[in-house]
Length: 246
Image 1: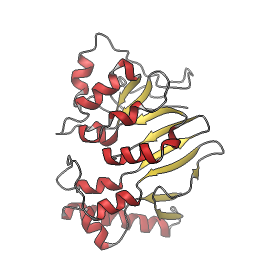
Image 2: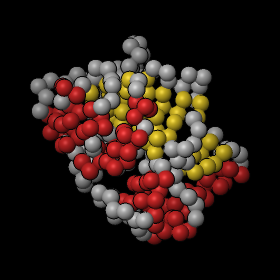
Image 3: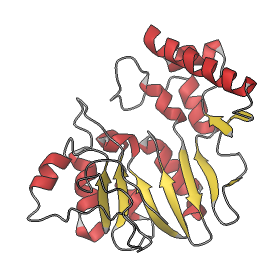
Image 4: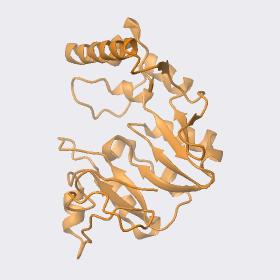
């Protein structure tokens, strides 16, 4: 019942974040809905987040921690420091400075959700917070739908992980051909030992999947090894909602 966000609700801030009337109206609508939910006590706690926030305890053993954004990204956002621009024309690519990197972890392993994080942020987190990655990576998300301007080989190469650790592309139909050939090629190389999952077979995945001599089509996407069918509708690991049980 907590709502945590990286957008401050002040006019000056929002003017930097948006590029069009459409985006501005969408943000206003979002905050209006949040205000209504707070009045109804559906949302009980609302705050701006950064990497300084304390851990959120999901269960006794499962915790959530924010690794980005930090004051570094916040200052770059306000100063309008340019970023690799592959955005919808209604959006401002500089808003990606405020993208979250979320670590969900136990004492043995962690999951990494990277949203639209930049290469610069991945570099900062990888160096300044290297102690956050001492355990095994259980699942990772490729930033910005697998965009080439957000993929950083060195960040993923340094992560300890088991064989065929899932990397997920959260991506739909798009004009930018996400996920990029750069990201797909890296995660598909046997020496890097990852396994790709995607919500849609689009972009470079079309060529990648068709080039395989054979592919295993299965609804069993359960990392815990049970016989439970977690998503019987998804026709393959490259299409449909991807559900992982730990």
